[in-house]
Image 1 (cartoon, rainbow, N blue to C red):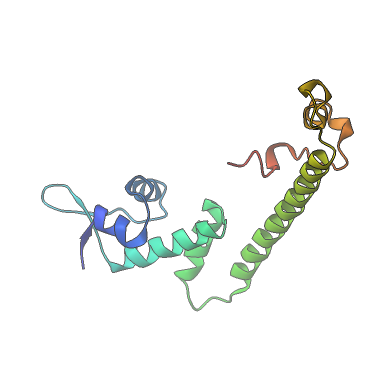
Image 2 (cartoon, rainbow, N blue to C red):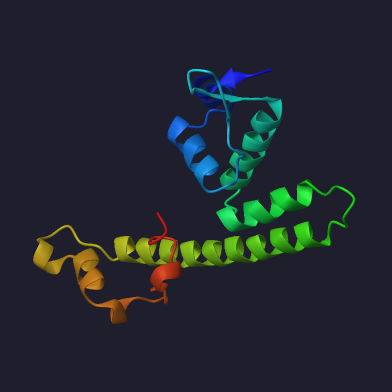
Length: 149
């Protein structure tokens, strides 16, 4: 069943611009074009887009999704590579959880030591101004959950 991009977007709850992006980077195959050059998609693209969306919701990177899609195209292969990708992603998630837990603890500590007076005496401002006052190392750099928006 051929469906236009708008119906595919609605069926999968994925934005049209995202569908075009996935097509541009090769996660989705190039759409078939009608005589008036409109994109149309079939059921296989619908299933593939649902797979991509679910993998993105679970936080998999585009490259990991590309690898998983390649594996799913070869169903007779052993599952070891898919397991390896999932294990690698789980380690990243666990690291982020640890970082977020440290951030939560630090924020709770800042608020517990807050004040009701003027900003000049505010513990939140003081701690944010001087990282050495923090109880946890949560700098994280580029891999920090706060820098990955």
